Amino acid sequence: MKKIAIFASGNGSNAQNISDYFAGNENIKIALILSNYKDAYVLKRAKKLKIPAVYFDRKDFYLSENVLNKLQSFQIDFIVLAGFLWFIPQILIQHFPNRIINIHPALLPKHGGKGMYGMKVHESVKESGDTESGITIHYVNDKYDEGEIIFQAKVKVDPNDSPEDIANKIHKLEYEYFPKVIEGLL
Ligand code: GAR
Image (tube, rainbow, N blue to C red; front, side, top):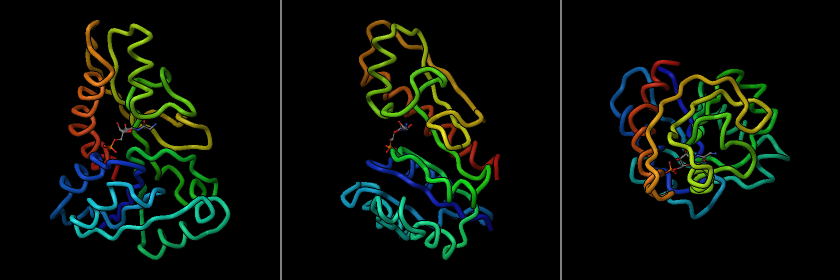
């Protein structure tokens, strides 16, 4: 049995989708959901899903081993960042080499880097006039959005798409592919 921890900062619709996908799976289990925001909706989702959930603050994450200890106490094998907005500390990268992945809601290396998350990414795509966008699933290293790319999928962007329209198209791709890519990697 492989145990996954999902980190999410906000709504957590990807966390929900991944958890639904693996519910009842005998080989892969979402064992823990973690958030850096106390009021993040993803923590409510975790409760409904009956998946253990943990809130942590900056001190826990960057100045202590609290988060690492929590992951180890749940015997986590693999970490999925699904809408998680903080930089991952070196200690986690060391303990989970090539076992932390992130999803970015655009075709990296475009529209990535620090501060590029959620709607900001889709607004950037809109402003650039790009005729396509997509999703990028990549390994996490010590630079924002620069780890090795594992998977990309594309979707057409129409000139009259709003950033919200682009976000909807991207979410559909995320829901379709993210769980399958995780399954493939494990
Ligand atoms: C997702 O679209 C994800 O790709 C993006 O945040 C959204 C979270 O939605 N991640 C980033 O922008 C990371 N740079 P969700 O909370 O509903 O899953």
